[in-house]
Amino acid sequence: MEWLARYEELIAYLLGLLGVAGGQPPVPAPILYMVPLVALLLLFLSIRLAARSWASRKKRAVSETAPQPAAERGGEAAAAAASEAGVAVEAAPLSVLERMRAGLAKTRGAFAGRLDELLGSGRGESLWEDLEELLIGADIGMKTALELRQSVQQRCDREQSREPALLRRALMEEIEARLRCCQAPLDFGAAAPFVLMVIGVNGVGKTTTIGKLAWQLARQEGKKVLVGACDTFRAAAAEQLGVWAQRAGAEFVGQGPGADPAGVAFDAVKAALARRSDVVILDTAGRLHTKVNLMEEVKKIRRVVGREIPGAPHETLLVLDATLGQNSLVQARLFKEAVDVSGLVLTKLDGTARGGMAVAVGTELGIPVRYVGIGEKVEDLRPFDPHSFAQALFERP
Image (cartoon, rainbow, N blue to C red; front, side, top):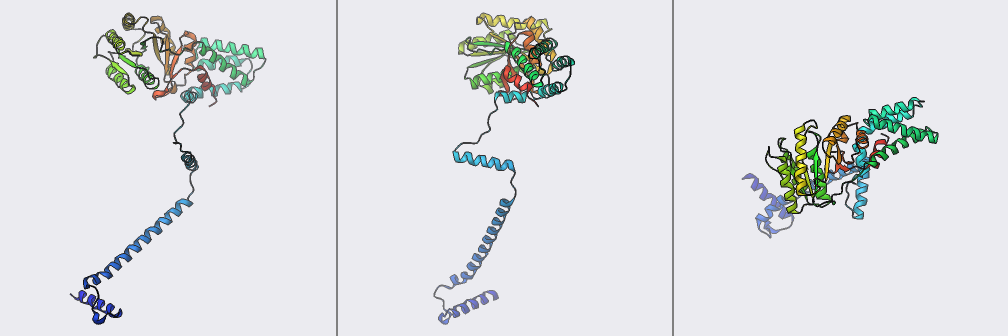
């Protein structure tokens, strides 16, 4: 082969230059034949590595000179500081006031903005009529709106001032005072087990409210909770409640569709007594307050659980949809006439501009608002706090 002969001539020539006599190498010929190949391979690898190193240095130089977003810089600085301090970086949890503020954003946007416009307009005697009209428009109710107008007007007359700041503060304090009159948090330790029955019309969020409440009691307060699925009319109601109970870590008692709701309630309280549960929550079928037979079913459940546990149910919560405004007030009034309602839950406050109905329901009916729903997360079912509610309602948008 011609190329091999030339290669041997090249090796012999190189050996001659090195002064090797007779062109006889001191090492075997095959090893010498590989030396140029190895040298070429090393040269190729050196060039490749040098090219990669140059490209890496160029990319790093470009990234260091590029402008960095302020938020990124701040985040990196905070992370670096936290890292130096040995602290894990976590999002700060929202306070009760912040959650309430976020949940009442729509109500506040419709109410606080118009209130500021009214107070800053410099109206004369029509100020009080316009204020009453504003309160009625916020679904506070005619009776409560009239009482609030009269109280604020009398207070301003005593102080001989109509300063916007005074009017605003007076109105906020009057609303908070009325809400505080009907504030009464639930005492789940008042009985063992504490039996809670939840009622309301279809679609107001009864099952979701029960699931969130069971999660809070079981996960956050460490109570042993049992949930009874007494809604045997709605399709898949028991299955939905069972999923919530499993998620909350609560025990579940239910029967098949069409079963006797009072029978399910009986099984639930019996199981709670046997298992030493702390709290029993009974779901009921969504019923219209005008349906006599369905209302009688609720009364039957009350009688059955009352025979097994004296004084039960210890609390009857009526769940109302805040987006319905004054219609929810009508529902509450009729339910109160038919059943012994002892507490209210206002759901979907974050999805309506009619949050003022919380003031009307609490003050006109004298029923305490126990919980409010201000979001979709399990922690967004909050015990009602009049001070936080009033602050969030009057905060400027």
